[in-house]
Image (cartoon, rainbow, N blue to C red):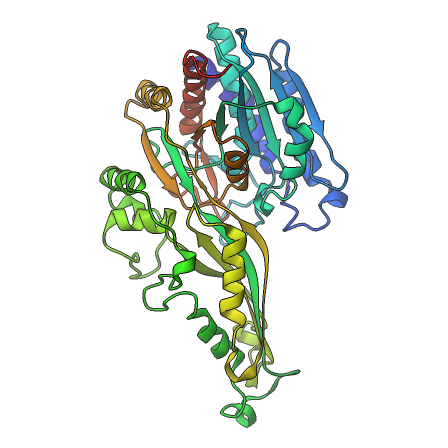
Length: 468
């Protein structure tokens, strides 16, 4: 652990500071990403760091398929004879800036305060490549075993990983068939122990457009004759979720919650208590959607939930005249249960929103991203034991398991491609770390301990007797 901590302090944190400065927004948020070169710069920074800290026999390549974001591919030979492979995953692309950063902070302005490194992308998910290689370096220094490890770092995750299938196909002969996958792009319920992610929700992103006029008209003249496009949009959204409870109505958008996941949610609720909701910056007297902590955990990990994340056709208040606007556009983000097929859900949402529009208005729902979630296979005894022992060793507390509400498309792809593999999905996105929002931070001490835990689990896998 001391060696890992020193490497973090001397080399990883400085590299992450430079990485945060790079506005490497994912292609969905920067259509001219190739011309701007920021994603390439981030990939180059990570590759150069890995080359400086290369392990014996390691091969590193920045793979580039025509017209696609780059992908780092690192192949580290195992310390023992085995045909088995471990796949470690992370990404380097980032979410956009977002407003609301505290004074002195900013998305591309790295700042260290109270042991936290602020800035976009450090925790989601720039740290992953450094963590993976640092864990392997520790094993080599300790002369502890590990199987062959392949580190795959993509640059399209925040856009739904649409470039990744092409890379998985192109690299398939070099990847092989992993028996163990370590994903470093998830979260933690607190910073006191190691957390394993048991499921991830899916996601459908789309734009709802309601058009009632070809141009805006005087509201005094038209109101009562022409229906408000916003009111129609509001009525259409009621077809998806209940505006009073926030619960999605349509049974086709739900899935059965396994008893094991309910049990894990109850256990997590006992450990986390009100921190499950207190970690969010509620305004005024706003309360959470339920009083039962276990139900809140299931809400954010297994139940579909709708959020309106953007709008067009709505002037800012200072520019809002007495005009009945011609149209309203709303960006809809629908989180899906982990086991629900996203394409099927997207088609169902389109059907619900476009059928029989009120007043015959022009209604369109166009979805772009449809990413299926992921539910982990049963955890092997060796893995459950290894994760718990690593947590107790490096955090002084037992490990916990819980579903997460975010989406990592890579996990669904791998789960389908390698159904026999074991998965250890973890990460550093804990309370207040605020990925995708303002004031995102990486908890440096937690990341150091997580790196040590990853090293321990890799050795446990090597000693487990699994794989060829």
